[in-house]
Image 1: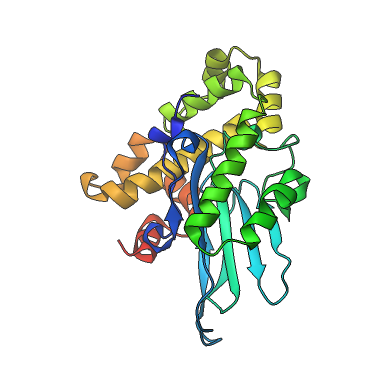
Image 2: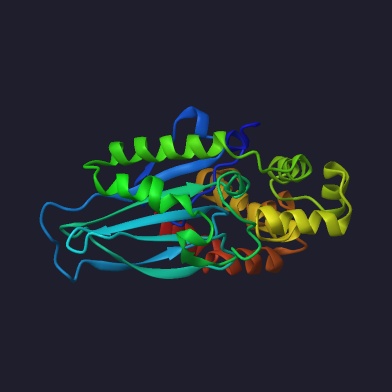
Length: 276
């Protein structure tokens, strides 16, 4: 598989405030990162909590959470999001840890057992889409003592799944490539041309393998590219109007409204929140 991750690197609302770990080279076309925290040696005060904004990063996650006092982990699958939301982020607690696998949006179907038609803004038990996870990986994760051990176990599981699953669609991947290459600035009729599919077929395969329409996927990728440009390269733009032109928004209000729809903040507010 062509490594689309070399062209596209989605960011969270606070890119420097995440514990992210890159996967092995063989998994980089599919896995954005592993992330999580081990349990603390001692509990931290209950007041050490804060709200964290989650923005659409176009990825999907399996999140494994363990309370050693209970012994049985909770495991969720979080589908692709198209709205921002806040969660209460707590400091590390003794005996509690979490570990997550973050998938690129185009790669989840290589590992899942079923279609992904219902994953938009979903937060469900992992077995809805990954029946083997609890049996083949979760029990191993319980026995691990470090993040590196968890990553090694997860990589072994994912490589096994990848080897045994040929579920993909070349027409879909051609369309995804064009979305990534164009930074989301692409018309649906152009995606039809590059994929070789008609409108209805294109909609069907996107819903089946990704869970959103091609138009929405392109819009989310465009937002992420805007956010990356703002975060890393904001000084190269003389004004907001330059971004409006670069990403083909119809006017400045349209750009700000679309950005706020996905980030929950204006561009300047998002940069301030991220510490830029």
